[in-house]
Image (cartoon, rainbow, N blue to C red; front, top):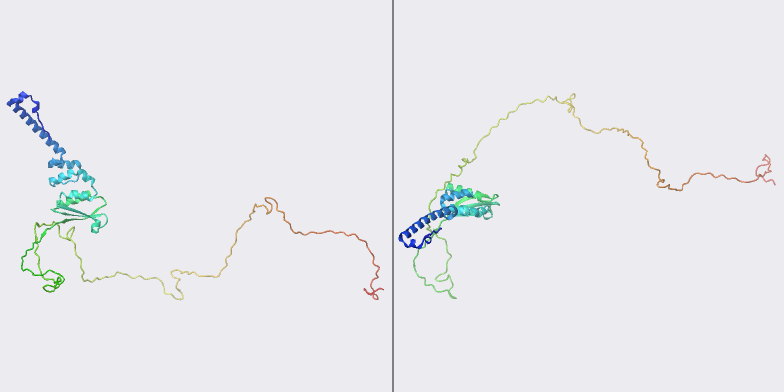
Length: 336
């Protein structure tokens, strides 16, 4: 707020004159109106709490935030005020709460582990006024605020009801029962306590603060097209096969036409006696290896070989004076 004052700028003699003082106050009032107009313009541009609705719509376009132009002004003001925190909360359940709380009375986001769903799935339950426009906004806001991997299982509308039960009664009789002690046990006076039994009864419930609501949902089985129920009916199916004959031009087996010879001979494998002649092809090859026992030097080993020995004897001839054998003188007989 800009407070403008110029009275202290005027000289004392002018302010002492009533006409001069009135002129100073009039100028000051006019300048204050101008300052208030300037302050209002500044507030329209900068202060979210004082922005008119048309300026809030402009700010939504400037910020590029999720925004519903048909919402009430307080919801719009909340979205513009929290635009930066809302961007920071994207991908979390809190972002869904932030966008839906301005449209519905209450919002509940349940993660998959809270209701036994599939991993990374969730569901949302809201209460309050439910219209096609509100449902479209809710689905758009959820799709924009949730993280990419999460999947919306269900968007449901819930309601709360307060049930007040009134009890009315009066004193019928006073029961002169003594206090329980060592001589009197509970359930024995004035007679033994009998086990209770169920009797017919009624309870009157008065539901207040409720109003009917028409749900704009189409009949089940009509969208996207009518669903037809199947049933079992008796019937007979007649099948007429179409076929034509084919003649095989093979003669019957006989002495002249043996099985396995027509239309061509059927060969069967068997074992038969036979001789296989093989002719090897080879050629000589000289191995350039030295004789064993010559490298690195000759290896001398003894061996037995054939040999002749020449002998020469020195002797003298001696004649024998033995007569030859005759008929009257046989060899070996004693000469003497």
